Each structure stands twice: as C-alpha cells, then as structure tokens.
Length: 225
Ligand SMILES: *Cc1c(COP(=O)(O)O)cnc(C)c1O
Image (cartoon, rainbow, N blue to C red; front, top):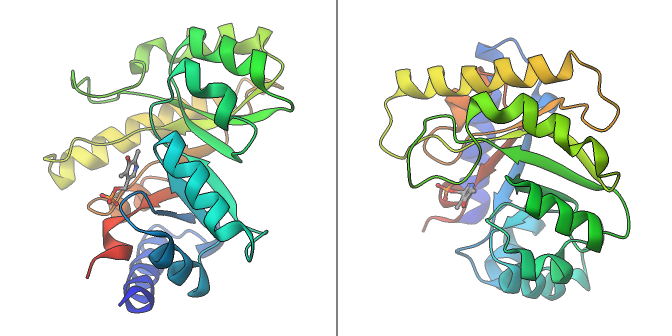
C-alpha cells in the first residue's frame, strides 16, 4: 500500500540522516510519479507528499492538470531529458528542472522562460555512454558559460548512478558530485548558488543521503505493489 511504502521510505530517510548526522529537513523527498496513474499520484499526495516529478512533457502536463484542482501547494520537478522543441510547452509550468546539460538547451530556456527557472545541471559522473549529462570535468566551464542567461539559476547538480553499481561505487560517485557542488558554491556566483544535490533513486537513496543529497528522486520504492 502506498501509505505504508511512504512510511518505510520515510523511516529509511530518517535512519540515513541520523547516520550522517544530518537534520531530516535537509533532505527533500520527491515522488517520481512517471510509472503511476493519476489515482496513485493522488494517493501519495494524500499520504503527505508535497514534491512530485515526471520525466516526459505530455505526462507532466497531464498529471499536473489532473491533480491541480485539489492540490495547489505541490512543487513540480521535471527530471527527464527535455527536447528543445518542447521547452515552450513545459518550462513555465515546472518549479525545478533537473536536466540542464547543453548550452543550446539553456538558450532555448532563456528564450521561452517568463521568469527565472530553477535548474540543476545534470552530470554524467560515471562516464557511462548511455547516460545524459555533461562530464564532471566540464562542469566549471559550463556553469561559467551560463552567466549570460538571466532566466537560468543553477540551484545545484544532478546525477544518476549506474543501475548495477555497488554500494562502494555509489559512495564514490555521489561523493565526487558533492565535491564539485561545493567547488561551484564556493565561487558565490549570483546566478549559480549551487547549494543543492539531486541524487539518489529507489535503489541508492540511503547512500546518496549519506553523501549529501538534498533532493532524492524516488519512484519504485513508493509505488510498488
Ligand atoms: C525514474 C527516475 C527516477 C526514479 O527511479 P526509481 O528507481 O523508480 O526510484 C529518478 N530519477 C530519474 C531521472 C528517473 O528517470
């Protein structure tokens, strides 16, 4: 049951926070609703979830519209690859965009945004071919180049660990992103405060919390039967 899943995930989050001497409110749980229907999404909101995420434009807009009538205080995250031709449809509908990974996409966001968009730069820390995101070494220069886009605020960095990685590998990968986040944050750039880390999914969020995640993106663990 969804409320029981949420209770279990919440318990794991609290344990991981305790293990890392972190406060519970330093980690925001995002429910990834991409594999769930509007009914299950409403159920998890009723159980207490306030942040939701989708990875496809059509589903994002449909899901948001379906629950919007009752739920105006939700925070909506877009966590998928966003094609430039679809930016216009969705960019002013989301609260956080987690997959900024090219200057061409940044230019399109700049063109279509009606206000400053809170963005995470997506980083391919493991270097897997199949992954979206820029490489870790490219991050400082990429962020420097975003200075000219006043509709983009770099709130943090985002990553996905390879699905088959070991716990030791996950620690190492998440730690690398944390170090890069701190390096950017130390520059105190007005357009890139970079205080946040979006990392950790159903199979690795406890490790991500230990390594400093501030937003975890959890789907399966919340919606499993
Ligand atoms: C699907 C997805 C998640 C959630 O994955 P689960 O393993 O179901 O928790 C998190 N982040 C991104 C970018 C996703 O596409």
